[in-house]
Length: 160
Image (tube, rainbow, N blue to C red; front, side):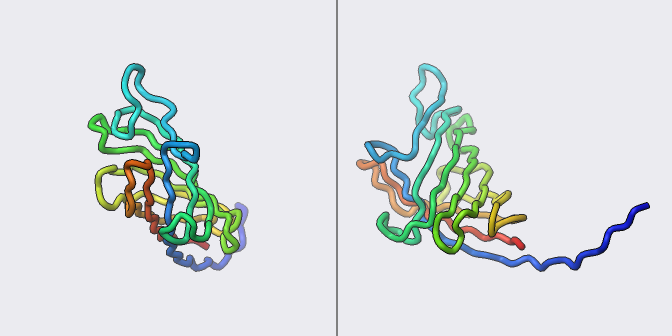
């Protein structure tokens, strides 16, 4: 029977991050699009089986002109028959100096009408290898006439 050297365990560190997703869903700068839905039904975030793709900027602060951190890219699908839940698959792709090239992978059911939605951080790359944790999303600005929203993303992860 082969034996392998025992490596000392590396202690995990906890990282907490807070960022803002700048979500624009119509107009020439739109970054959030429905692209599949039930034929003959209006494709909206409350219509069952509507799938959205997203590529939103992430900023350090609430203002859309604050320092850029990266992009949130992925998709969501309205997965509840009543339109209240969405299956979310997102990547936070960092471009800032501190985490450049690293990613966090987020997955889970988002209860769309709750004030704070919690999802799992299931993976990561770069500085976030072997990550595990959770994130909360909270919509802090809604500008319906301009189809613009700001979503605060608070991330807590443990990693090596």
